[in-house]
Length: 539
Image (cartoon, rainbow, N blue to C red):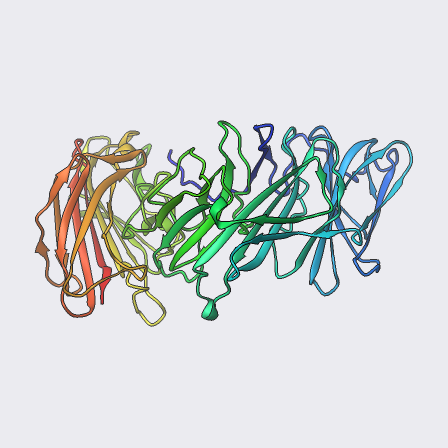
């Protein structure tokens, strides 16, 4: 069965110098790890007591992550509220010491060795040095800093059960000195121009520094624009009013990786939608995007180079059903793969049609055998299913999803509603049906980040018919356009080259919307017709 690609919650870290790949465990999970303080060990093991002193010399509460220095044998979180039983061994123990006013946080990372006696570890923030990233652009300021000790050998990172993620709005300090054996420090900073009205910064910098084995006293790292890689990022408005895309760095070496891909740690380049932003990256990494947006331009394994300019456009396609959503047979039950969730109304690009978080407000579905209705379901998360015959019959799956605000107003000109009709033949026991599912990907050219074409202009619209594995060569392709919300339709002239089909829409002179209907069929006779009411705006 196909699966939707979910947001990644584990974090991949690695050493640039060594080129060694490693995978750190997500919070709350430890493969082969021993959790501390158990009843069985309470009477035989020494204990660890932790304390903290803030930058003003005051004792403050603290939480620390403790990890075995050379294996996954022990991982746990310690608090200053009580002592914790710990088996004898060598450990890396790290903690963030926060000021009571939350204006500053200091990372203290140190080794400890436990034998037969209990020990007390004091995290003293006073020797900490401030982390500063600078660039020769006086219009920006440091917005957030991520500081994480990690081991390229074991794949462990000290944030595993006590991560604060990137810190924004507070000064970040790190205590200098030698790190525990085999551990490095990964630093990453985001510099932005603060705009009014929560507008996206038109320029951002995402800078990385790795400190192998020790933390120096000088933690100021200067860059120049000429020494960075520039990426012009365009993200259309898809109506969420939230984050659009987050970038994370990967080491360019084959099989090795560096950075964070956590859905809860959005601290690298966090670009809001809509946006037209110049992003400058530390070169030598392949910066990959995560979050809501799906990219039209993937860099692959190539690292971004200093002094080079790149460009990425996100969510250029009109939103329509994902190829993840379609009919599937389990035994003698015909149902839909995926419930009426995000995949009913998404940009079906990349990773087999990953959802970008566009929740339909009124999703519905119908199943027909011939012209007979055999099942109906409605509501987000609903399941549509019906028993079917052992002999091959013709079936139709129809889905409809509407995206409107509480006042029944379409959201930012993107598909007020989507209707998809799939017609196919199947029978009980058919396991091959999901491989036939496809949906059109419709990409109007030249629309603004607000999804609008100019009145009286002509808009070129490339179309591909996408399965999970990529585009197919469709047959019997037809495309229609409407300028009155689908009341009347005009059939358009279609040209194609290989698996790409193209139409040209003559936009009305006055403000409004253009609706689109696309139909195609594959070699197996699976037919899909998708109708998008208010596919893009005209202004």
